[in-house]
Image 1 (cartoon, rainbow over the protein chains, first blue to last red):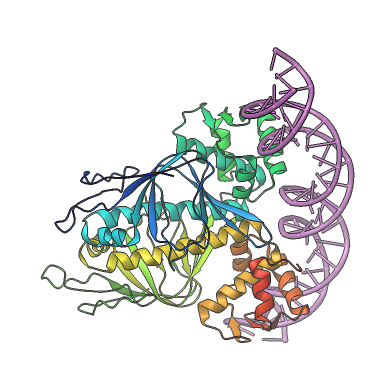
Image 2: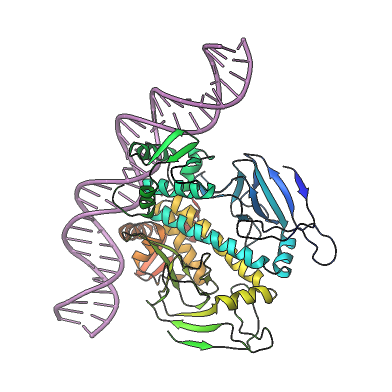
Length: 233
Length: 233
DNA sequence: CGATATCTTGATAAGCATCAATGTGAGTGG
DNA sequence: CCACTCACATTGATGCTTATCAAGATATCG
């Protein structure tokens, strides 16, 4: 995991653009953020670690997860470009963050981040917008986990992945995570994930050219299914 | 639902204290927040409403919920003093907020809120701290919904309610919400909630003096159960 | 005190988990 | 180049947890 330090870059911050700026806050040229690369499979931080930094995903895909003492795991989300991680309330990470593809991160030390929030106009607002977006995703995930059937969960998940990747109607979609990751994200077992994907294929809603890819054959029906417009299962 | 307008109060903002301030930002005396009371059973806003305000809970308990088209409901949280609601990313509320006890709210119009975030030192940081705390709660709830058994869910829920109410060891705990609310929060049915509470009572972990109250008889065992330290069910 | 909502308990069923076996694909070394 | 291996995925048989359907108990309120 190597790092680069930038300084003096401009403060662009459109939504899903970069939060980032490495700027000159009080007259001294200060590197307020650094770029860092994480290899697939490597962890950024683990549940329980001291949380000394805030990260913004610049590229690649991260998996956030929590563990119970007996090994049961919940994957609370997959993060891509524009997402924030490490906003920890009590100074400790409440989840583990691992790269499932090569990942590029912008890292802010906590103190630098707080200075930016305080000093840079628009920065706080942008952080809040990203945080709100993530709260919304969390609410949707709770609806999914609490009340949706296995097929509804898979349909919701595939559509979310499609959106994340900007996939067109009937387009091919990459699933860079394993079936175990998907199962732990959807509150199911890998067998149920596998069976349910096969069933969606039998029903001509999707195609599965290989294990890492899905083609959405009927986006409308998938959306009805995901939304709980309950005609079938 | 009646309202009062305050102006000129100080900018105290300890965690779980008030975000609130009705202050004098640019020389004019501007009421930046108003207090409002909501009766039990009344809604503050509904899923899909335009989100023009941010609220902070000053007192009482709110229920946040989402609906699927066929009526399945997920209660995404119960909010009490210090929590924020209404931080909506795309201008629309993504959940319904209803009072389950009489509730007192501090309301900020969106524009006023954004001005405060931009202009008042410490305000943005405090909002972020509250938002982080709520993200953490959301992560815990996903773990609960995705991976915990019915008894584990109820143990977790009771301990959270105890914490929310500042209940001592072996203390009596109020459950102001109905069994249906609890079921929709924990991803269960009311029958399972009822049966599981009865089972916890049979096992001497709790007592149920009446439907609206619980006594925690063995906090340690409840905590093991909630944490997934799997000796029993 | 009857009417209605809420809660509890019981009998049965469904959906998903578990256990088990087989299939597939990528990487390795003979 | 091909067998071998190992991780990952699929499919099948069975069982368990929780949902559903149903009845009765308790509480609330006019």
